[in-house]
Amino acid sequence: MNLPTIIQGGMGVAISNWRLAKAVSQLGQLGVVSGTGVSRVLASRLADGDLVGHVRRALEQFPIPEPIQHILNRYYVPGGKASDEPYKSPPAYTIQPPKLLDQLTAIANFVEVFLAKEGHSGPVGINLLEKVQMPNLASLYGALLAGVDVVLMGAGIPTQIAGILDKLAHHRPVSYRLDVLGAGPDDDQRIHFDPESIFPGIARLVGQLKRPKFLPIISSVVLAQALLKRSEGQIDGFVIEGPTAGGHNAPPRGALKLNEKGEPVYGEKDAVDLEKMKQLGLPFWLAGGYGNPDQVQNALEAGAAGVQVGTAFALCEESGLAAVLKTRLVRQALDEETQVFTSPTASPTGFPFKIALVPGTLSDKEACDARPRFCDLGFLRSLFKKEDGSLGYRCPAEPVDDYVKKGGKEADTVGRACLCNNLVATAGFPQRRKDGYVEQPLVTSGDDLASIVQFLKIAELSFAPRRWGSIMRRCMEGCWGWRKREWRS
Image (cartoon, rainbow, N blue to C red):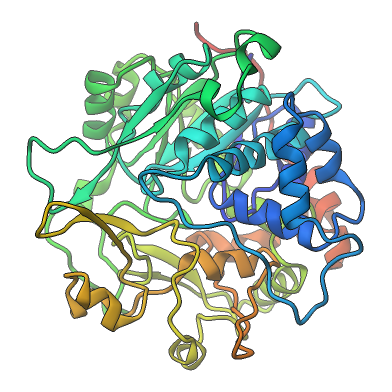
């Protein structure tokens, strides 16, 4: 496949959906779907009636029909559920997930990649998080079954993924070493996935799968070098993500310092030496503030293969960001009122997390404080070792008393947001609780949110939300000077 100049960022949950990835891929660049939380997204799309039928069309293409019927029986609501009815959520992952959950997770990722690749020959990638470990094996396998071309992974040190891809391409059983709080040096806790046990007969039906390229998302040369040394399989390149990018950021190197706004301070130690990156001999892409033609050219001149762009794509018509939020964000940009805050506490992972300050979302402190604490999706739960040696699950965004009873420190719960539920709501699938509370969105964005007005100016069109996608396509085709090069084997 050709080296892309533009990698569309893999924004979760369901912001980088199949429609967005497909639109980018059809233009010759790397469209990327998000695999984070996609089991909940699939269940929600079916609950909303799958009115156009895209999901069910993709489900029909899955090679084994039995689990498909179970999924439809459990989650599909013809015509869509009533607006005051809650979504039926899949269970949270554990170290020994039920077979049906692994099936749902794999099939959800299959659907997302299948729809993104349908009807064209352009490349499609999938983005997953090292911090969301337990669903990753099933997610990767489902993506491979759909022919995914590239796997990208950040929010951690993904040394295991390349080797896992090698095995899954041959339908071999795999395991994933899990991070466990309080574990000793000799502890080795793993989650297992056997394709033939989850989908009996699958290898015979589909044959050997294509092994996708693997691009870890990194923040330093040291991390790139460590991955090359410790990876259990081949790495094909890197995405270098700076602290101005949206979503999760790598913590600053050294002691944490906050600025007057309460944001982490990044310094010279956090800058990546691109000359040293070039010496590694693999292609790399730059991310964080590269969503304009000048920055693309600067990246190419610095030796990068191209750039990864998220924020601009999040505002596209095709993205999964709820339409009302797109309108507010673009309006803020036009009125020069955008604000992005890098929160050191919002994410349960402990990583800094970018929050766009948007009225009517949980960026409002009062709205955030008014949210009852729930932890039912559990994607960001951590495994911990109990005093008796057994394993437990906790999240600093769950009810404080529950977290403390599980051995957590109360101080770690301060300022935490339930990103699982918040980001699902941002994509238009808010959960309704028994007490009537409706989960509210929380928008993440890169620091360059204000620069999205450039696309309106370039296209010489007045703002119209429904036309934003066509504006983006015109700008991408006319201004970002894409080049095609062969990927190194």
